[in-house]
Length: 537
Image (cartoon, rainbow, N blue to C red; front, side, top):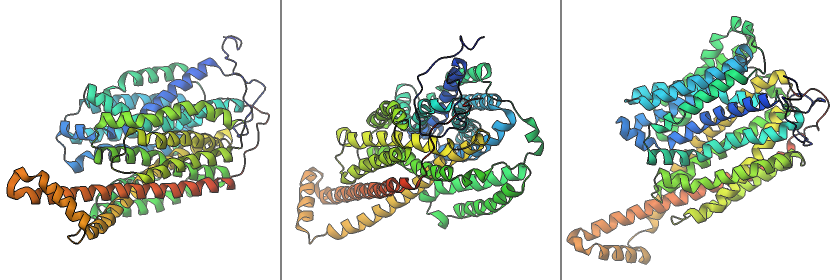
């Protein structure tokens, strides 16, 4: 088939970002490759969405599997632990097996595991299949990022990067919405069955259309099993500690202390193997590139905001407002709409504005949204949360486009596959560390505010006595139990108010973090403008 009949011309957009290779004379995008890439992006969307779509309906899954409150947390923990190991490994496997084989295996395995999750009848089966789902599906995420910087001309990266940025940020944002609708309309089983048909389509499209590179099977001859096991121990145990630590008093819990020791010991072995093995599992030399190192750091911080706020908003709406999964999803849908509408604008701006300034603007808008949340009360509803969510959505999209371009766009093509795994790992680790920190701070601040409010709500405070009297009057029909019931209600009210105040403190902390990061964006080196050279393979 001739180039004339297989090429789709897209108007070039001047870009200051650096691609994996310089743009060549041929600035056209092969429609076959474009369709293949879109199919791969949909696979990545499913893998990322599956984290939040399940978290929004854990209560329903717990009831369906007759699981305890401790056991149900493993439905998420198993997936995240497995995924965090698979993401950095994907670079090595992509070079060894080729993009086509790795992505097809990942999509097919993810689809099969999703189907089995939907069929499970016990919590133990669910945990096993969720771990398989996370490990096999984790390879899709960094593979898409790497592909964007190796098959498209540099002049098209400001068209492609907003798309993968939108998928990476939109999927976890709309997860509660999708999960709420599926659980409400059908059952929790459809949280997994929904992946089956699209997963089969993505697998077939990958096998039929992807031909971006050739496998290098010789890499498997020197596969570093010690490196793999030590990396699994290091990252998997660390993820477990971060997930379970806030719920179980950190190192005071014997299991968490043991896993922390496993992570530390495995880390020593892993880093030793990385620098001595003939073919290391992960190549850390990408961090010697200043922009990649800074971009990965910003990706880490972005993960805190992305996953942290996706956690905090539903937690507030459920604990304080009493919303169910569907109502939470409908309220949070605003951020997704803001991201979707901002994506093309971010792409255009990335071609016209210094990416450092775009990054700083994104973090600043993010800070504006969290600052507005510091005025939070127990009566805040959809309209009070509207603008904070809009600012969050816009800030997220304006941030992720320059972060991705600066981090991956400054590397030569042969290093992008490995670097993409590290880049995405940093975002996931940022989310894990962020959630652990937010949970810990939230618990500590709740305890602090409860203590302070208890000091204020005493018999010597006229307002407290008057409030208790009014509550007692409402319970007069219960006779001698009226005052006891009123005291219980007042105690619950104090606890609720302390929780709201703690939420406000956490949002203030996030505001400070993102204001500092917005100011720190200036230290990044501005990428060179598009030069000559081949942009694709």
